[in-house]
Length: 271
Image 1: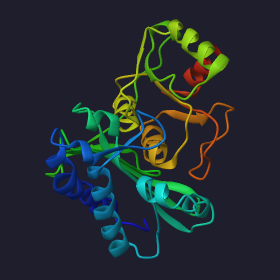
Image 2: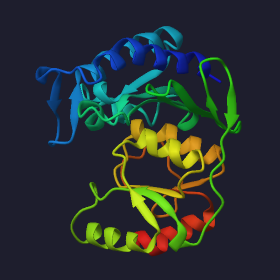
Image 3: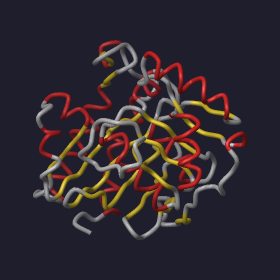
């Protein structure tokens, strides 16, 4: 592994303890700013945590391209370098910033390692529960605690469509597509949105829901989680059935507990 995943996981924890958790429910008005729309926020915690993580990644893997959500906001050209980078570390310092800024304890810190265009490791840290879910390609997915205890993760058994639980948001579907997808979701037993892909990927990889659906592909939101779900036994692909790759930023993404379930959801929900 080109980057020590356990060390990287601890870096995320250190960043959360020093820069994120102390600011939770203590943000001042000037600590929160809007980016593209009212629910797309950045806070002082996002920026300071990313600075912390970036400095540590540069020390651990100076040859790696660092792709952070807030770094890219300042330098959008960085995303174009991901496709050709031999080694990259992708970071979302606070996934679920809207929740964080609203005082809702559903957010996470995510990192992934990409080697020669392929995701080889993914980490999602939950600052509230002080634990990780993580995976290395070909090695399975695990829940891990700071004392070193770990448990292997597995997605749920496949279910009929009308018995499925899942996560989906209409936020990045538009016009007729939005109406079609939201209407079709009435075919499942239950769906919700945590507004936090970190927690949603943790939930499906841990066997508690049957699918997650996204229609906005930024690598810091999906590279870690999609690898973890696959290593937990799930099936992840873009809406057109093609594999999801870290350097692809368009097209929706569907993760399900099995390929058969994926096919059913693609046909009946995405349409």
